Amino acid sequence: MKVSNIIGISLITISMAVISCNDDDTSPNDGHTNGINVPDGEFSSEQVAIDSEGNTYSIGFDQVSNINQDPFIHKQNADGETVWRLRYEETPVDGRGRMIAFLNDRLWAVFSVDGGSNASEYISRHQTEAHAFDGVYLSGYGRGGGPVVNVLCEINPATGKIIRGSFLRAQLDNGNTNTKRIVAIGWIDGNVGIKAESAAWPAGIGTSFVKMPNITNDDRVDGAFQLYYEMDDDFNEILVAGLRDID
Image 1 (cartoon, rainbow, N blue to C red):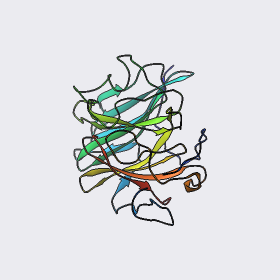
Image 2: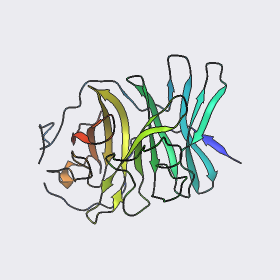
Image 3: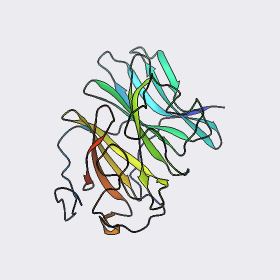
């Protein structure tokens, strides 16, 4: 029997293997060498979004077996009738819908996956418009498997298809992908603002993964780096990256 769940985000300590570090960045915040002041703006971590016509968009996951989950978004009209309901990842990789929001009148969603796949039902190929993951910051999961990473996407409200998307991850010293969790998303001066956390080395600015400079093990708070990013709205590049204070 299929069980559908709309899940919440909890700020939990991330338990992962991490190693030591050294490296330089921007303005100080609370004593951090590359700390950053998070701009004022509306951030969301909700699992339900409502548009101006009263349509409701719910994000979550289907428990398709005792060991596998598939993420979904469900659009219902103002009368509660289903307009569309799509699963975005239907492989043995575990996938979940994490949050959804209208920002600047555009629909954004955060999913998670715990590995990569070449199958056509994988999140970067399944419910996508043409070239949705071409030329983006990170088009795939990376090396290894098991740690949970997030996938930030813009969704077509009419069809549910992914217009554009990018993976966001942390990395161990050996190059393997490690867990990164998006805590909230917002709209900041034409860019997508991202509050996140990771215990392994987080990314700095750039068009592909480069370890954030000037961070050490001492920069973790309760075992995790507390992070702030801004990406361009086409997901080509991380424009702003730094450590943030916990809200």
